[in-house]
Amino acid sequence: MADTTQQRYSILWADDEIDLLKPHLLFLDRKGYEVATAMSGRDALDMCATRHFDLIILDENMPGLTGLETLAAIKQSQPHIPVIMITKSEEENIMNQAVGNKIADYLIKPVNPNQILIALKKHLHSDRLVSETAAADYRQEFGRLSMAINDASDISDWMELYRRLVFWEMELSDTATDMHSMLEMQMSEANSAFNKYIRRNYEHWILPDGTIDSDNADTLLLSPRVLPYKVFPMLRGGDKVFFILIDNFRLDQWLAVKPILAEMFTFDEGLYTSILPTATQYARNAVFSGLMPAQIAKMFPELWVDEESEEGKNVNESALVQTMLQRYRLPYKFSYNKINDSVAGEKLLRDFANLFHNDLNIIVLNFIDMLSHARTESKMIRELASTNAAYRSLTRSWFRHSTVMDMFRGIAAAGFKIVLTTDHGTIRVNNPVKVVGDKNTNTNLRYKVGKNLGYNPRQVYEIKQPARFGLPSPNVSSTYIFAGGRDFFAYPNNYNHYVTYYTDTFQHGGISMEEMLVPLITLTPR
Image (cartoon, rainbow, N blue to C red; front, side, top):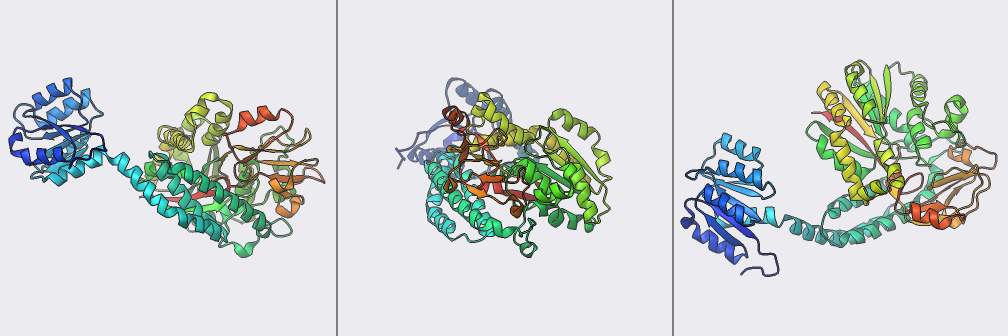
C-alpha cells in the first residue's frame, strides 16, 4: 500500500523498452510514487522543460540521445535533480563519464524493483530517515549519557563523555528533529558537573610551588606538557614536524574539517586539557614555554606581559620556544610564523620550501579567534554564525578555501608529520553573573583578575592564592575568578547593555568542556 503520510514524489523514467518495465512501475505506484515515462532522451528533455520531477531514471542505451547525452543536458538546465543511470554495460569509461556528470546512482541491468526502491529512498528520503534514525538513537543514548555524567570521576572520563556529546551535537544539528534542544540541555548539565569537577580537582593537578605534578603525567596532559610530551619525542625519533596551532579551535571544528584532510593524512586523535585561564595570554604562552604562567613571569620577566600592559600578550612566543629547547637541551632548528590574514599566508607559501630544512616548524593561525571576536562586534557575522553548526560551517569554508589548505597539501607532499592543536576552545554564553571591579580589572568576560573584586563566591571558581596555581599576581592581593558553564561576567553599571550585547556571543577564559578539553591530533601523510 502507498504511504499516504509522506509526500508523493514525482519520478521520470526514460527507457526505450519502458513497456517491459510495467511490473516495476506498478510496484513504485503502490509505494506512493508518481511515475511518468519517456521512450527517448529527447522526450525526457521535453517533459523536463514543462514539468517538475523530483528524480529522473535514465537508461544509458537509448536511440537518438544516449543516456549520457541526456544526463549532460539535464545537468545543464536542472543540476539539482538527482539522476539514476541504468545500463547493461559495465564499461569503466561509461561509469567514469556518469560519475563525472554527478550521477546520483548507477545500476546494472537487470534491476529488480527493490533495487530501485532503495535508490529512491537514498536520494529522496535520506534527510527524513537520517533525522528519524538519529532522533531514535539519541533517545536510546540519552540515559547512558546521563549516567556517564554522574559517573565521570577523572579527566579521561570527561574527555570520553565530551567526545560522545560532540558526536551527537553534530549528528543532530543538521537534522529536522526536536532532539537538538534536549541535547543542549544535556550539554549544560554535563558542563555544570564538569565545573564542579574542576573546582574539586584543579588544585591537585598543581604542586604547592605552582608547577605541574609530574606523577600524573601519563593521565593528565596540560598546556605546558604539549610540546615536551607530544612533539619532542617525535623530534628525538628523527621526524621533522610541523606544529600548527589554530587559536580558539574546538573539537567540533576539528571534526568539521577532518574529512577535508582525510585523503592526504591518517590521524591519531586525542584531547588535552587547557590550563586556567583558558585565554591566549595564559594558555598559549604555557604551550610555547613548557611552563606555567607564574614560572614564565619569574624566570623570563622580559617575556611575560602583565594584564595591565597595552602590549600584545603573545608577542614573545618564538623566544619562549627557544628557551624551552635550551632547557631540554634540544639542538633543533625551528621556525615560528604567525598568520593573521591571507597576505601573511600567501607570503609564507612563497617561502614554504625553505621550511623543509628545519626540524620543527611552528605555525599559529589566528583566523578562528578573529572570527569569534568579529562575531561579537559585527551583527552580520553574528547572523552568519548564529549557531554552533553555522560556526562550524564558517570554519570549514575558511579551511577549504584559504591558504591553510595549500599549506597542508604542501606538508603532505613533502612527507612531514603535523601536530595540530589549539590553546583553548570557546563557548556560547547566555547567563550574566554580576561582578564589581576597579579600573585595573581585565576586560575578559569569562575570567577576572584584580585586587578589589566584588562577586558571589557561590557563582564563581575563585583563586585567592594565584602563585599556588601557577598564576602571576599583578598585585599582592590579586584574586582570579572564573565563570563556569555558559555564564559570563557583567558589571552592574550599564548592566542591561552588557547583557544585551554579549548574550549568545562566543567567549573563552573560563571553565567548560568546550574551552578546556581541546583537540590534539597527529597527522601522518598517506
